[in-house]
Structure formats: structure tokens, C-alpha cells
Image (tube, rainbow, N blue to C red; front, side):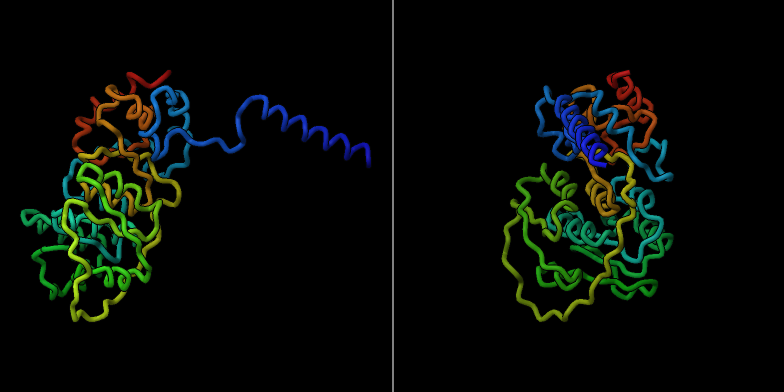
Length: 301
């Protein structure tokens, strides 16, 4: 028994030394991650990026699918990522409302749509199709609070209300510029309970109102089941698409450019995904056939 124990210990030691000699740690840091755009090009191995992109557990709903979301207000993204939802966030198009909506939607895992009066009927149909019973209005949106089909909750925009809506205490993060909005929204799920605020909109402090205590907006569970497809965006992607993808639970990679042939960081984000599973969150990615061809052109064989 002593001899067997010695042999077992020796075997484990030899295996450990072999791994050390290879220079490969047991838990190696992933290349394709949110910090990808911060790496020097010399640190990017496209073969490794391809392997990471392809060797993932994918929800069968997205397995082998290649999707470019062209819709600009989030209706298509809501249908893509959510089959149903008790609540939905409908927000105005000003930057303050956008960041407030992102804070609520991502933390509570709710789909979000940017209001467009010309597409009001489409929005109403989405609410019906998803089975929405609570509509959360953020910003100046002309939607009556006596809809009848569902409860309409008007967000007063205060820090106090945010806590009451979600039963959490929030810190604050100031978004430095409009160009940073997509990137900071994409990272919201990594930083729990952070309220995003625009640096270019003067902060007037907490409003003193006689508002009644707000009823909580129940949080929903993540919908990705840890099996989200590869999801990419750029700073120019429609904000509602990015909010909804992050609320779904997916990890959104923000590419420096929508053309993977122009930048190695962008190529690494989509390497090996010409046949899916990939969701690109904006019309800036162009026609599907051309985008696929660009991915194939620079993906290592």
C-alpha cells in the first residue's frame, strides 16, 4: 500500500511538472472576452479566437444561426431573445432616458424598446405577443397610463424610485461620452446595481417630489441559460438592441469596426463564425452574405 501511494504521488507530480513545462495554466484566460479590444494586436491569435468562438455550448435555438439585427428600436431583438416577458421597458430617445432604461432593463432582465410614434402599432403587437402585463415607461413617452391591456408604470427618474423598483441599492457610473454608451451598457451585467448617467447632461441632483412609493418590478431570470450565441455590436449599433441582448444574459462584444477585415480585434470576435452561431446587433454590419464572406476570408483554415 505504501509503494502504491508513493507511485500515485509521483504520477501526480510528473503530470503537474509536464503542465508547467508546457507553460499552459489549467485555467487559461480567454482571449475572446470583453477586454479583447484593449489588447495589443500582437497578443491576438486568430487560431485561438476561432477555437474559442466555435467550442461553446449554444442554445439549440441559436445553434448554426447567423443573424444581423437591422431593426433600430429593439422590436426585432426583443422577439429574438425573449419568447415571453411579464414586463418590458419602453424608453424615450434622449441619452439620459436611454441610460436609465438600460440600468433598469439589464438588472431586471427585461426586453427594452425605444419609442417611435410611427411604429406604435408594432410596439403594441409586441407587447401582446410577449404577454407583457407591465409596461415601464422611461422618459417622455406619450403612452397613457390607463391602457387597460396592461399596467403602465411611469418611472419618475429618481434614484429613490430605482431602488424601490428593484429592491437593490445602486452605485453610480458616469458614462464619459456618447461613444462610450454601447460599451458601458454591454458591461452592465458585470457590475451589479450600477446606475448609468451621461457626463454631458447636467446632473441636477435628486429631485424632491411627493411621489408615492413605487411597486417593485419583479426581476426575471436570465434567458441565456449560460448558452448564449456569440453576440457582437459596435458603438453605432442601435442602443435598444444592445440593452435587450445584455438583459437576455448574453455577453456582448463591442467591435472597434463592423468590418472584420479592417481590424484584427474585430476579426477575433467573429473568427470561425461564418456559419453561426452569431448575432450582430446593427445594420452597420451590412448584408449577411458579404459579412459572412469577410469572416471566411480572414479566418484561419
